[in-house]
Image 1 (tube, helix red, strand yellow):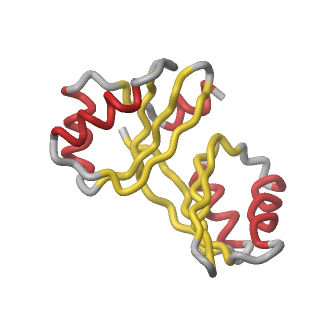
Image 2 (tube, helix red, strand yellow):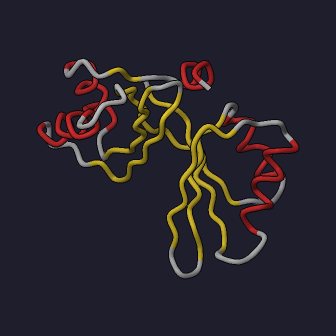
Image 3 (cartoon, rainbow, N blue to C red):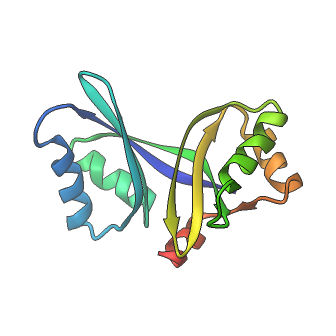
Length: 142
């Protein structure tokens, strides 16, 4: 029920982000969602894309520091409060969310997050009736 996300480590200087984007462009890999968290010296560019394994290999060949990790993605109705309700289910179960981002795709809200307990989070998704989605669903909605 998890999806693959790329975590790309880039220096905070001109030209480092374009190196990543150009490599993905040349490989014809579609970016579905991304976010950058930064510090003074470097950033972590988190990315959901059409072919995460191939993207990871392509970026490594280009000399980019990248890691592939599992995160959850759930589909939400595009209505106020849906994200709060979903996060409340994890909070009530005692699950910490280490980071989260969201975007709209195909008229639906997509909430991407990482937790401190994947097995417990998967159980909460099932029991709370949340709609977990996989990579094929994401690329099908794009």
